[in-house]
Each structure stands twice: as C-alpha cells, then as structure tokens.
Image 1 (cartoon, rainbow over the protein chains, first blue to last red):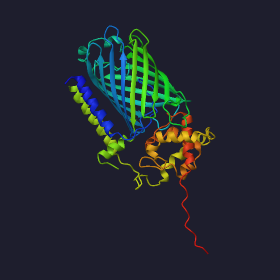
Image 2 (cartoon, rainbow over the protein chains, first blue to last red):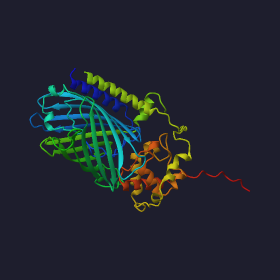
Image 3 (cartoon, each protein chain N blue to C red):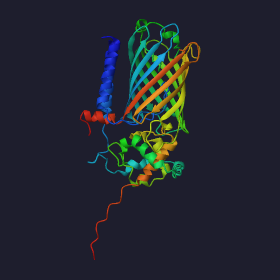
Image 4 (tube, each protein chain N blue to C red):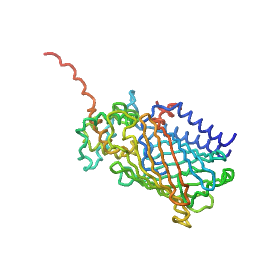
Length: 297
Length: 156
C-alpha cells in the first residue's frame, strides 16, 4: 500500500466516522486566517473538522499541492486540542503522506483584555517532504522544497513548537501577533518566526433574517508571516516572508470557506501560495461520544 | 509505514482524550427534564461585573430588529448549552431566572464578552459588539417564566 493510499484510507475512515455520527452542526463564526491564530478557542465539546490546501509555485523544481486535515476539539473553555494529518502532491513527481501534528492551545487569562495571551504547544512528526507551510520559521526558504519527494522523504523531523499568541478585538477588528519558537528534537538550534493578522467582518450587526450572502457572514483581512532565523543567526537574512489577503465565508449551513492568496516578499520566498480551506463545526461532539460509549445521557 | 502507524496511534489517543473529556464528571446533577436544578450560585458571575460595565446601556435598545436578529444568533451560538428558549440544559443554566432577567443589560453583555471560562462558558467577544447587544436584547425579551397560577380562592 503506498503512502498516498494510506493517507486516503486514514482520512476516509475519520471523515466517515465523523459524518455518520455527527449530531446537529452549529453556525461557525470563524476568522479567515490560515497561518495566524487569534485568541479564540473552540467552544467546549465542539469538534471542528477542517480541510486545507496550499498550491505553491516552485522555482528550480516542480509546483506542488500540499493538503492537510485538522480535527479541532474544545476540551474546555480555556483549552483546545487539535490533530493534523499532512500530505502533498508534487507535480511530475509523487503524492506522499508527510506526517502528523498534535497541537494544544491554552488561554492564560480568565477575562477578556485589550491583548489576550494564548499559549500554543505543538508536537510534530513530519518528513522533509512536508510542504503545507503552516508556519514559516528559522531559515525556511523556497530552495528547501526544490528536491524530489524521494529525497525529501528521507529526512524526518520531530519538533516541539511553541507560540505566544497575542490577540485582541476592537470595534470589530481583530489584530493578532504570533511569536514562534521551534526546537527540533535532534541537535538543531532553536528557530524563530512570526505571524501577524488583521481582520474584520463586512458588517457588525446581524440581520433579522437567515441568509447566506449577508455581509456579516464574510470576514476579510490580511496576514503576514515569515522566519526570523535561529538562535545563532537571528534576523531576516536567508529567511522567507509572505503577505496574504484572506477571506472567510461563514455559511448558515454550518460550513466555513476560507481563501488566501499569499505573495512572497523576497527572493527566498515562493512567489505565490494559493490556500483554501473548508471546515465544519459539530456542536455537542463530546456529548455524542459520551452517549456512544455509555456515558451520561 | 512507521509514520502511518504512529498517525493511527495518535488518532486513537486523540479520540480517547475526547471520550475521557466528554465523560468528565459534572457537579450539577441533571433533573429529569435535562436542566440542572436551580442553583443561585451558578449566577454568581453576574455579581462580578464591574460598575462601568453594569452602567452601560444597550445601544440597540430601540432597534426594532434587534430581538429577531438576537433570536437567530441565540439559536446559532447559545441554544446548544442554554436550551432552545434559554430554559437551560445539562450543559448550561437557564437564562429565564430572575437573576438574569433583572440584571442590567450591561451585566449580561459583560458576561457574554468575558465568558466564564472556568465553568465552560466560552468568551463570545468574537461576535462583534452589536451582535452581542442583539443577543442581550433577545435574552431580556424572554422575560422569564410566567408566574405560577394562584390556587382558586374559596368563595365566601
């Protein structure tokens, strides 16, 4: 069985499981960011299933389509846990499963403030062929991804990633800043990166009718992200940076669509990253699982 | 192959964590109707609203569409825990009780904005401010349960 098939089988298993047993969905109010995080966590007991794609251009190699699935669960109002499965197809090359990630986000303060800190901790086990570019850190540059998949897959990374998410919402505008510190669990120095984002719904008041195309269902903004070198060579040299307008459409039928067109800001960056995503929030997933396994009715 | 096995193992662990968290004990014993028994202590958070928040008036008080819009928002974001008509459920308290219905609009707005994160009520500041005020208008429009009918008085 090829890695691609395995990825499809695993993905299908979980997709089927969640579609069969999913209870009533909720209308999501999701931000449009694909790379940056704001301080809002998943509502307790809810599960959000997300699929994302990144199409990237590659100088000196083949363009690629990377994709990942996310399962985001609100454990409590201050803790969200998330699981990712990553894969990619490189044109004129192959499709490969590239690894998984476990992520946890912890809200640090009880009340809402001007700036709200959230601690992010992630463990990732990926191969060098991982191209989802979910975060840019250290000296990640375009040429790192130019090799054939067969070569890139030989490298395996186990990393711990820490982020401090600082975010606030004022007059409908959300502003967020993410500071990233990553430690490869082998003998590699700490690497650093950043992500910034700003977004706002097109309308702040809700209408008195249910509608798909109402302005309040659309959130638009921009995000910027890039690397900041490592412990021994901190700074902007040999780093890549991107600026991406982003948009989200929160459908009353419980789906959220996201779109982002990222542009490389220097010669070390991919020229263009087109990202899109589809997600669905399932309300009361925790209760449903509990009932399924004979817990409280 | 190793990565796929590891991914499956992590999937299984993730599911196990979900199940464990879903089955964590709830201190509120549910009543037969599914709503927790009335417990005034649940509403203590309302008393913690600062004076500034308490004195805020609802800017949409006279908006004729605020209740209808708030009703849709309530169904989308609140009904899962507080019940379809805010009667309460195993996951969230009733909002029809006097503690909520007599609270100033600014207090309800403050609780919506800040959540009660230690008690599973999420922060709702991700809803724009006007939408939170629309929710407040809807919640206040519910007015609480109708008073119980008085027993018929014996005719003199």
